[in-house]
Image (cartoon, rainbow, N blue to C red; front, side, top):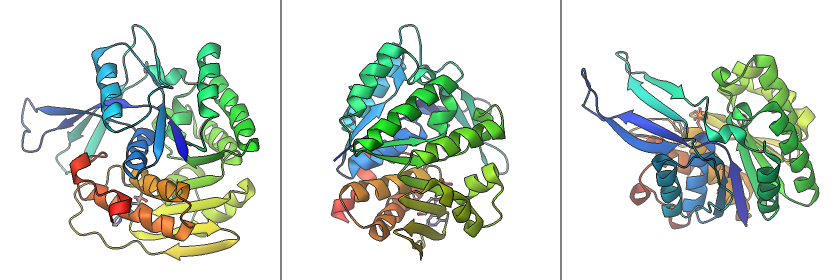
Amino acid sequence: MKLAALGEVMVEFAPQQGRGGAAPLFALSFAGDTYNTSIYIARNGIQVSYATLLGDDPYSERMLQAMGAEGLDTDAIERLPGRCPGLYTIQNSADGERQFTYWRGESPARELFLDERCRARLQDHLRQMDCLYLSGITLAIMAPEAREHLLTFLDSFRRDGGRVAFDSNYRPRLWASKEAAREAVGGFLQQSDIALLTLEDEQLLWGDRSAGKCLDRNARHHLEELVLKRGPEPVLLQYDGELTALDVPAVRDIVDTTGAGDAFNAGYLAARLKRVEPELAVAAGNRCAAQVIRHRGAIIPAADYLPEREM
Ligand code: ADP
């Protein structure tokens, strides 16, 4: 089984612990929602290809090295001369909240599915996959006409037996308007088999008053599997005409919940690609998220990660 994820990897500068003050020191790493998920899927033993565009700068080079070290297939990655990837910094504010500041307007990943030649190459690559994974962030950074091309491609990919997994990951700042986000997300849910949604994001985007309302609203998409994440509250799974609430085991010593949803998706999708039943796949998702929230950052060191097969 092979999965390809589409999206953007960014340079991350995170403040080093205990190094506040006038001149904080920042640790450099790489992150991005679909990228984080790809890493944990690969660590759980599934072949993953990451599809994006990078530049020809030293950071793009280091990203490719990092992906190689994680065993990700980078064959679908295009390089745009003279460009460099998006970047964000994390700041710890006085009240302990983490603030994210982004410089990503000129990121090469914004050209995903745009150029005809690149698109043809990418489509050939994606046709070899069993499953494609993308998110609302992937959509938000793409040009509207590129999104249309991707939708058309997903239609033929699914007709040929491929499956599409989607996390709506709504980030208001990335969209021109809520209406634009709703239209795009709605269109892609129509071309999805597995939806991995977070209630908080759904409420922000659609104004759902409850989890029940959220599930009802999504019925129109005829999803094969719908997973609704709700932090420590039970995960709701809609599958095969049944709705099941599955408890999230309590996690002690939570350090940082960044990337919890991304990690959950990885545990879930890796299990599903190994033909594990959805209910057990939710448990695998919870286990993956539990490991991640007990560490700082969205991507925990490989040495600290216990792959699913060893659990
Ligand atoms: P997101 O990171 O997208 O906001 P959630 O906060 O809903 O997603 O969390 C995703 C998953 O992470 C949950 O389904 C659960 O498995 C795990 N998780 C998140 N917060 C907690 C918590 N406080 N205790 C235990 N597990 C948690």
